Length: 151
DNA sequence: GCCAACGTTGGC
DNA sequence: GCCAACGTTGGC
Image (cartoon, rainbow, N blue to C red; front, side, top):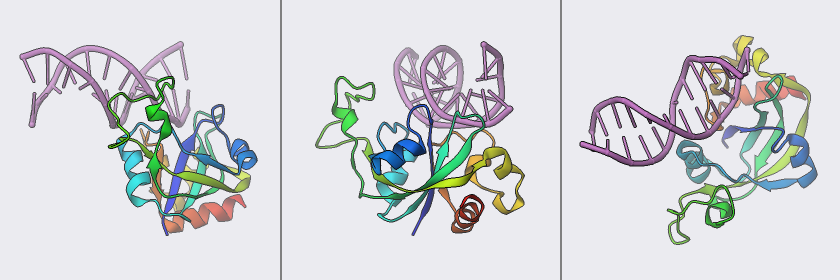
């Protein structure tokens, strides 16, 4: 099993939205590295840290699971969507996504600042300077430690 | 294939 | 709102 961190701006889609929806398509990702993780490395049942970026302060907000195999992001074919990609075709779709299902909300959200100062969490990609990648791999050790702190 | 210009992310 | 750190685009 693999472990991941996925960023979302809470004003756009928060852990509470996911709790309400139970499950969502992780659409609109237009970054190749992030796409490759979803397309090539994610497996149903993989566990996910749900991270609120552009929040005050930014923090891990909850837990989720990968709930589907990768499939083409429908927004890339929607001419009315701001994520429409004219270079993508249904035969050869450029953007793939997976579904994410709700697991749990943090009792205690884990702030980025606390990740950064915790030696047990050193090396987490999200804490690295200039880390903009919206989907990141997380080690099992880090994931379980975050779980212990949040639940 | 290089690289300058430009756009975006996201912490602060 | 600022800006550092990247990613992308497109001319050459």
